[in-house]
Image (cartoon, rainbow, N blue to C red; front, side, top):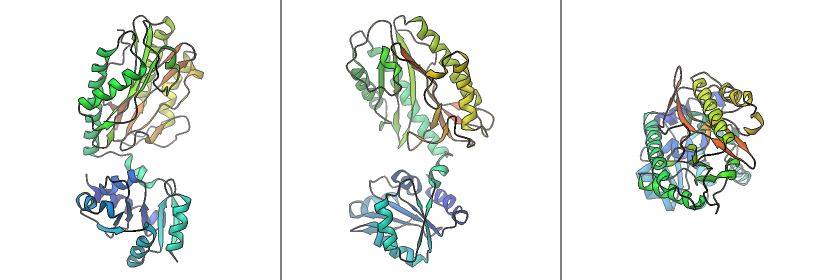
Length: 357
């Protein structure tokens, strides 16, 4: 990973933000900017004078993971160490991540940085992270490959009487067996009527003939996440659920077809949502169409009615329409896609047709 290039990209933004340096405190953003994977680290990005901060637990780890930056180990809190470096660099205005710095931390920094202005900024690093480099795309593809394999394998474990929790545990074991470094999130497994809950927590509901099964899960590989959902049938499902699956499949394809560099999140959402609304199920599609995926399972850019930002090439987003009918069940189909100049590229290869076991 070219962390220097990433910091240079942020440094190029400093003048437009009207700051001399930018303090990165979100651990995910710190990892993106420096390579540090520990639980306490901060980075002050100020051109070629960038500095990394951590405590004594991570001095050795930082030496391995952040070899290209000046490293400062503090024994008490960040504020005094930061004040010393800000003074050394002659920094007068420091931008900070307003979404990640607590009020208490802000007060401590403000007290320590006498004569220095702290400037609240939007998620500048998060926006840079929208565009994936080659190594990031390779990690995302590898995570998706493991996820695809686990999906194929878990189908063999479905049988009358198994519970949602058992299948969730099976998915976890299969993901790890097939090469995942961990889980992107705890798997969602919903049988029958429980599939009407988009984020159902797996319980003791047993699988029965005629149930639909919704599984939302993903592998973690090299700190990058995969996210996929499939709804299948165990035996012959209710006719309305078969109809709903077909509508959702068409809606997802419409959304995929609408993804390209320069499209807005709202435009892509509308393409998929229009199919569902046209079929009379508009009120049953209760969430946005998708979100970015990378170091976080949910990041920008987002696909939804209110998101007017433009999708850049090399962003990776999910396309995940759903229809949820209380008392009956629901269907969601989700895939990650890479935004390209004229279209998009679906990262996974699992079938999106209705599988009936």
